[in-house]
Length: 274
Image (tube, rainbow, N blue to C red):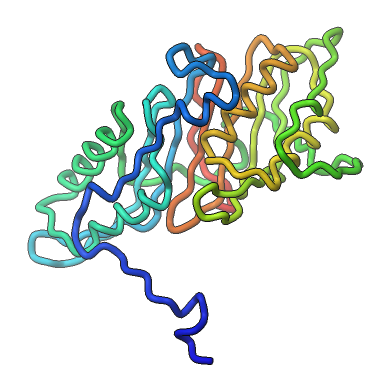
């Protein structure tokens, strides 16, 4: 057996020149139809914040330049952009000359806006690493709960329960959210932060619910919208915010956030695992 026979030894043909056609948009309505959300009257606000760690291009004299970038796609956009296509698209800049950094930034913004169907914000640089998805929130991690779990999918909203006689405001977090990419089958890992005001959630049930995504295949954005929708329907909070910080793959990580309309956007940040 030679190294060519092994999966890791197989050649991958990356793009050799800039190509906006590599971006693959997917209608958000496809995923939302499975959870009963009408794309024309969304029950939430939100964004998908991407962090790009591997961005490079050539300057006007052919010298390589490198950068990182933060891409913000509104949840109201008709389409999400498939992550592998975004990776290939960004790699298509590697051997292409641009006159300035701003020319690169504006080109990415224009192409992503066209693919998503709504204005996408692109800024060079990344937010700092912090310990929460809300800069001032006191997080209560539920991962150490002493519970038995046997349900790994499909996502089971039946685990969600809330005490309507006890109204609270709290922020809960778990690093045990895991689902699978519906395109490649690879695992997607995330820490989810749930901030709400309303009937007190049963924490053991919430943890079982999050773990029930473990064998589920769905895009990152769709998983977060499913979590938001299930919690909104089962617990009936007055205010709800759900953010998932997915670990990096292929030089990209994604942080979808969905919340009750009018909720302030959480402070942008990154986890250590990102």
